[in-house]
Length: 299
Ligand SMILES: Cc1ncc(COP(=O)(O)O)c(C=O)c1O
Image (cartoon, rainbow, N blue to C red; front, side, top):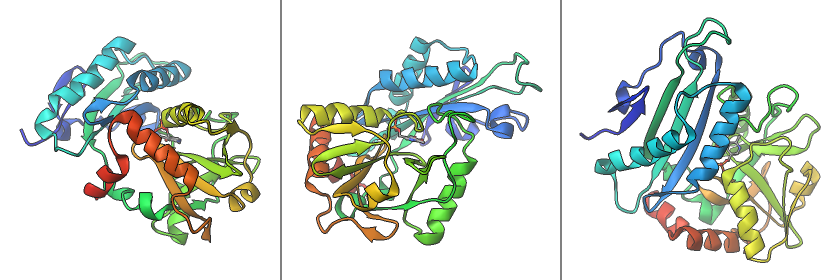
């Protein structure tokens, strides 16, 4: 079969046949949780970290996924194994799991959830040239959700503020990466990534009060400690960002990606800067794949 196969409500079927009902609450209301991993050379990176976050999100929003933690973990591994007929050497897989609350007429009606576990290719094209050139961040007008309304620690699919932020950023720079401020005007995170600056050799990233607790973020904090680079988590204002020495973003797909401009303002001549370069090579060593070379080859 020249198509990906996916787990969908108990069966393995062609991905193109995975369809939700119009009354599914995930579709109708964004009442759904998801998780995303990737492989490096075919091995899923930190599956436990992703499963922990998936099951924390499900527990918080009280969706019973109908599969256990261990079963979900096995389904993820099986989704890679079952799609090896689609494997391309030098490429890698991006995994996704979606769990919706199903088609109940109210939030408390007990109906079966919709559970999807599938893979695709990592979308290198979106970011491959940015390891050399750096990405452009635009600070959007739309704010991130406050933890008082919808806690950003949940990896959910109620993301209209992110869609608006993407539109606002694209109005300014079509190739940009939108970052949202929190309700107090501090920098929170990007629409699918965490945000970092470096000042005087210290890596600074927002505290985890107003952001998704990125699996890549946690790994970068550990990696920086191993490399003897100090890391602090604190509020970052636009002033701190505009006057930083280096900036980067992190997410599962691209790991560590240098940023060259913030709201159109160049950060420095040297992209990637010395600290980001150390992180990228440390990451490549850790996963056994040269992530810059891989992205360039799959541009
Ligand atoms: C809002 C948001 N922040 C941060 C991240 C980065 O998280 P991770 O490093 O686990 O991919 C994501 C990933 O999808 C995200 O959606």
